[in-house]
Length: 150
Image (cartoon, rainbow, N blue to C red):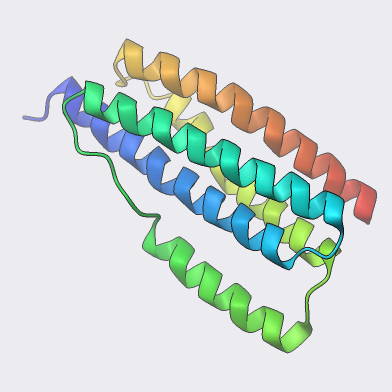
């Protein structure tokens, strides 16, 4: 039978993967954005997400687990698709912001689900809830940016 620590490690590692995906997505967005303010915003977000990964990995270790070191296979597939899409359609900041916001939706949903996990150990839940507050704020800022662009 799995221990509460095993469940916490599983949930936290799922968040590590998704947050790594987010950091990678922001790095790609920073590289491809044309407007310098978007480049700066996305680069800062990539760094912020990398820091969140560090915190989540430390929490995984506190439960006796081995933290994930890479993002999800689904995200790798999605990045490959976006690279192909970029080559076919060209890049513009509005399209990049749309993709960033879509990624924020995925990240927010994962953290929201984890924060509501009744089986999650209290210490892990506290970490997830703190992270979720930050993720939600970031999501809302990107959503507002998207709506300004349309």
